[in-house]
Image (tube, rainbow, N blue to C red; front, side):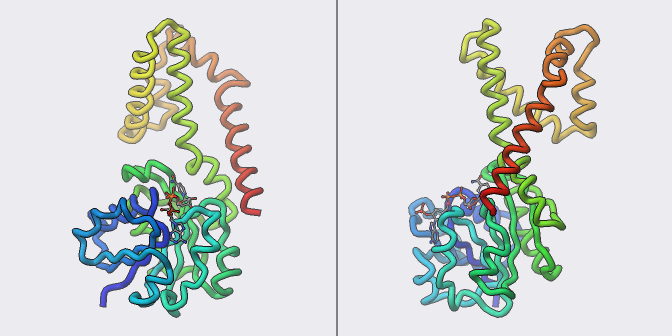
Length: 271
Ligand SMILES: NC(=O)c1ccc[n+]([C@@H]2O[C@H](COP(=O)([O-])OP(=O)(O)OC[C@H]3O[C@@H](n4cnc5c(N)ncnc54)[C@H](OP(=O)(O)O)[C@@H]3O)[C@@H](O)[C@H]2O)c1
């Protein structure tokens, strides 16, 4: 019998993962999807190894114990979502949470002290298969870690954390990070307007520059610091801008304060 992969919550992130699993992850599995609002999941009808259920209770009527249950509801819905999983959990069932800010001990307090819980933190470029996910697997067996990596790799790259407490800083860098890059595009647009460009042109130039430079970081063999040096001539225009951005109270100072604020907030929320 093929392993059963159960997904609780198939919204933005759950759908992105499911699309990846069904497209080219190489997973030979069955999928039970628990999602109260399934209008956006009509496309799964083409896959006879996917079954949709409106609730955990509905799934419990026809499903068996899963190899792994992926928990992908909003953190504030998690308590309700994992209540009464019952027959969906077997002796070998592992749990993989993608919920921001919920520590593994929170899950074990509800699912049982021996529950095998892995915790991960994806980010929003997962929607286009370009996310990066940090995975804390604790002392999970290698086979379970490999399965979790395969599942998460469907939406981008995966890094393994040995220490769960790093998850707060991870959240601050990569979890919240896409918003900082979006803000960079916004700020460059606004500054372009101040420099005399029409708003549409400023936006087009700023957005293409941010996405093109990101793609170049990805494609290049050199680190971003070298890419920056490569485009900076002494006494030129880039150097003039960088003298502002790299001042003592410039971008690194600003970004450090922002990331520490996000990390501290993550610690508070995970309390
Ligand atoms: N999106 C991101 O970029 C991102 C990044 C990192 C981590 N995450 C984490 O990923 C998780 C999901 O985020 P998301 O953005 O995908 O949220 P989302 O789009 O709101 O998806 C959550 C889905 O779960 C459904 N749901 C609610 N209660 C449920 C229940 N009891 N059983 C089964 N399904 C239930 C919701 O249905 P209704 O809409 O009908 O309530 C919704 O479709 C969150 O914990 C978040 O912290 C997301």
